[in-house]
Length: 143
Image (tube, rainbow, N blue to C red; front, side, top):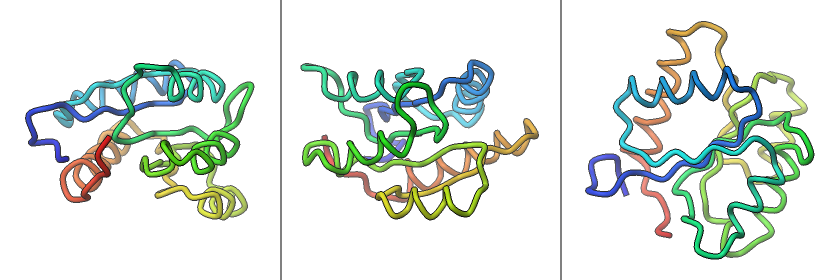
């Protein structure tokens, strides 16, 4: 599925910072990402949403590392342990640049680890790069 297909791309954003949520929403709009963006504020909500009967399985998950109740690594562990959810690409989108966090995320099956930029223009460019690769170039698994 690509961004040019007739259906929008379904993205699950797992982010607890309201400011980052607004930035990501604006960046998606700025980069003309036709998407259905579902936003949840912590890891427990993410897993509840993904496992809820009748919920739309996202094409892509943007997952913060430092979340309340269940952190991003714990969510990633649960996703990769569930055969029906394991194929979903997961991008760790976090403020941490710690080498140990990068290593832990990839060891648990993250598809990418991206540090949130501090500057607005860089944030817009980052979402554009995610759009370009994950939603236009890469072939995503079907739901």
